Image 1 (cartoon, rainbow, N blue to C red):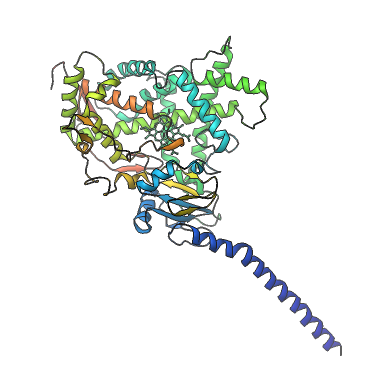
Image 2: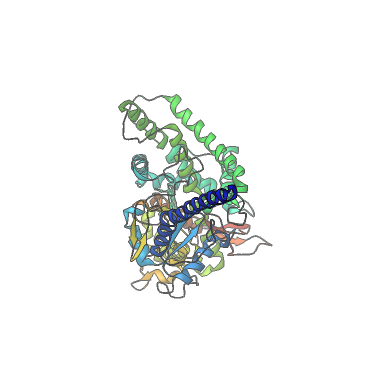
Length: 509
Ligand code: HEM
């Protein structure tokens, strides 16, 4: 009797448990599985990955852009790939990249893009904060000279100081370029540059180099996979302490500059550099107690300074280094550029930026360097602010979007013999003009394009032409040319040879 009662009660309890389990399974299927299947089937095509980590374990620890590009070849111009907890949508042809540039729903950055999440810089911000900081930054930089003739004058002064330093035996060009190029952005940001032998200049160079070598664009996926998963491209995690230390050193330097500016006091709204302009705005926004949530604070100023300084130094120095390597590899273009210098500028005066209009070979050489170097092979991640489309493909809110510039620069539908270095491809009208096609986009495009494009163009032209005007460039004994590339966030020359810069006299060589 007791046994029967126990059995009945047990079977009722187990029935209840079963019902509960089945209910939970149905709930799980309705809440998670069906929406997940719906989402996956609405995404652009792409490879399958593993549970929790997606395709991350199959992305290499280095040269990740090559894996991104390998998948584009297999899955087409717009594909999706699950990386950790993110869906990444990769856009690899001009039709869809162009359309994406114009899509204002694709202007956000990933939420965890900044190593300092409480105070991201404008490069890492999204939404209204980004808009306000970008507008303010461009406004200040324009006011203090960016895009104006006074900037060109200052760059020319800097080049005049720099050129003699090349004539000092076998040299490592890249660090020298970094010091001089950094002075141009420093002038705009804090009103002064540094002497090349100033220990601070060397220290900042080292910090930049460490950051360049240790950071990875793909760090956004850190923390998006279980700790147990080791096999993913998050090698930057182990480098994180190094990165944070370098960033702190960098930020300290900027902090000191801000303090110097503040201690000077201000008698008016007039300012001479980015720090001055930002402090004026910060004071205004403090007084007006704005309620729109946009904060112009000292922490963000510091972060913006670090961003502008690093973005404005490494990119230009690396592009110039590529240009010099290609001049060494293909000396016939050195001769072409020198012929144009002789015809248009001569050897007495410094080059002007306006000379470029009459120097099609030189401009073609610069365009081709941008194309083949593909310094930024895959763009900084964007994030969809809301559900949107790229062509016929659905892009769900919060998916990450990446433009594959490497694929564009080597697309055989856009370029004849894309693997070949051939500046002639840009020449038009019987070699009297250099024409840059719209699909060569080293600075990205649309409303979140690179704000330093104007400055970069001036510097690239003036530095290159000034060097070729003054020097014959040779490999130092024992050095060889290598076009091998190293990649973290930029594609840089992996092995830069030691070089000799031999002054050319006033005659054509
Ligand atoms: C050869 C030189 C350069 C190249 C190839 C380059 C390329 C780029 C690219 C591809 C982006 C990403 C834009 C996007 O998300 O679509 C970018 C962003 C940015 N660049 Fe440059 N850049 C160069 C020089 C500079 C210079 C000189 C500065 C400083 C004045 C600068 C400051 C920035 C900043 C602040 C951003 C972030 C913009 C934002 O998120 O709103 N860059 N750059």
